[in-house]
Amino acid sequence: MKTRIESVHGRRVWDSRGRPTIEVEVRTAGGIGRVIAPAGASTGSAEAVDRRDGGTAFGGYDVRGALASVDGEIAELLTGRDAADQAAVDAALIAADGTPNRSRLGGNAIVATSMAVAHAAAAAQRVSLWRHLAQERAALLPLPEIQIFGGGAHAGRRVDVQDFMVIAVGAGDYAQALDWTAEVYRAAGRLMADAGLLQGVADEGGWWPAFATNEQALDVLMRAIEAAGLRPGDEMAISLDIAATDFGRAGRYRLAREGREIGSDELAHLLLGWLRRYPIVAIEDPLAEDDADAWARFTAAAGSKVEVVGDDFICTSAARIAQAAASGTCNTALLKPNQAGTLTETKAALDAARAAGWESIVSARSGETEDVTIVHLAVGWGVKQLKVGSFARSERMAKWNEGLRIAEALGQGGGRLASRASFPWGR
Ligand code: 2PG
Ligand code: MG
Image 1: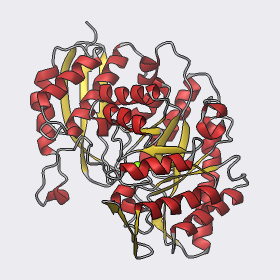
Image 2: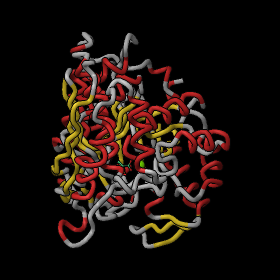
Image 3: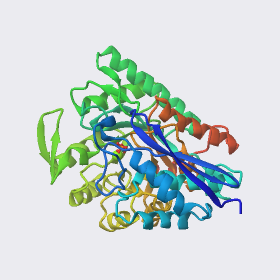
Image 4: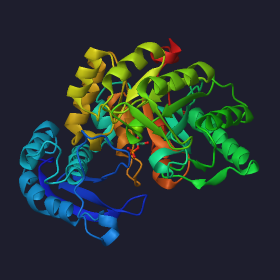
């Protein structure tokens, strides 16, 4: 059997924040699968957790323990199994770990293994992972959601909002979406430098701003879109990740920039004001993960054309999505494989989102590497949107560039996107 797993090997490598992480290599007679685990900074409490060594070396972020899981228990567990049976592999990993949050073997060890197994199965068929996942389905490229400014936990809380992003809603294809975003990114950097507001780049490659308020960021973003020769709203829309779990608890939110604390309704009111004043089509984690009632009120008030995206709130969990759908707390799922734990659980979350009539966005983490697996997941599963951080730094560009390669392999020149009318804001 070409897909029989012959060996599983872990390797300690480094991520985009210069922290140790795990690469897993799965070998079958038919080919090799290799994946590097990413790592988040703004995390939800229901996520699968990475196993880190603690102590003083590398700030406690070392992964020798997780590495031992891969080379020891995990290798023993999977050797001889069929890499083509992803569900069985993932079930075995989950059962062997035995904890609800993967803390024993390590979420980092497990997610890299799970995805490396998928790559190995694809390699044995001599196809790329996206094609292996898409089977006969006609594949589309995902519409990119790209960060222009970084804030929150990714930029020393220089602004409260974590991601100020753009979505090229008027782009004709994937390549054009990247072209337009590149111009907006450049224009934003130039405007900020001219105004003395530029302090380098944040964790995901977005400009590290010295804005006085969150609104100033939105205003500069609008000017950057116009300076790039694009029509805000029509051609280039705005998307925000508030990442409110990072600065809110028990219905109270601390706006560090403005030095004040506000309640859930006040925060919702502030954000709804932005939705009226700026062409915002998606807003992620507008409230904290422990503020479900306020989420429901916000989502009802934001209306059906805005994607209200659950990240920390949902943690890529099928059960949490079903629950959130029943209570109307959001309408779009952010899908991060390392939050769910395995590929099978990530796909289950996508299926739950689809069953609820939600949109989905496949997402990278703030700690990334050259690994491009998530692009293959988005294309292979037919997910219409992809979030990877900014338009700088090679751990981000590797993923945007992989989309261009897939577009070419599909014979789609620029890379066909889902029709505008298939998105909530396009209806
Ligand atoms: C998020 C991600 C990516 P992190 O909050 O959506 O921007 O950040 O990986 O730190 O959770
Ligand atoms: Mg987020």
